[in-house]
Length: 67
Image (cartoon, one colour):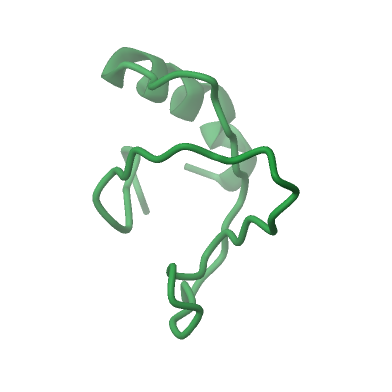
């Protein structure tokens, strides 16, 4: 049982272009490796969230997943 947010990889800060390119979730930049597991939700924010905000978001949805 997971008791706190877990991140599969280091946080990466990047800019999303508005050029109608495809955004892949769970796949590396080179297209060769995929995340093995389930991704319950994805959010894209217009700014970096603080650690407190990440924890608040996690706690707000954790009961959906039995955590």
